[in-house]
Image 1 (cartoon, one colour):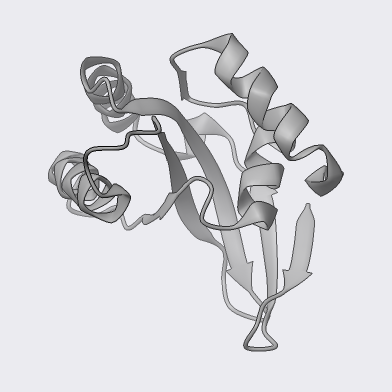
Image 2 (image 1 turned 90 degrees about the horizontal axis):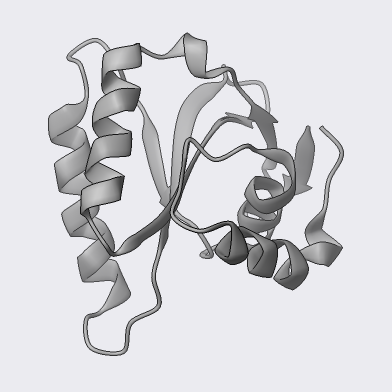
Length: 136
């Protein structure tokens, strides 16, 4: 489990979760969507917990680096698509991989991606975030 104190002073814990904790049909749709959308490099599933709050199922989406389209706009488009895939009874937090070194390092070293376009991409991220490695 990774833990860090963020800028607000809140302690945040990240924890791996089992794929079986989510509906298989949802995960299948996410994998199919990620495979079709060439902007997506990887999708990671984990839980986030803010201090004494309950754990929240979360997903980090890694996007390809592009110079033409704004990252936030691309990410918001992908968020919209994933929200359409969500079952009505499932709430999930969506994060863009790389917006936080802590989150990126945790995902790169401690979470098996539910979708990965290229193993070489993951190796690059593990090297980039080698100082962020945490024990689960």
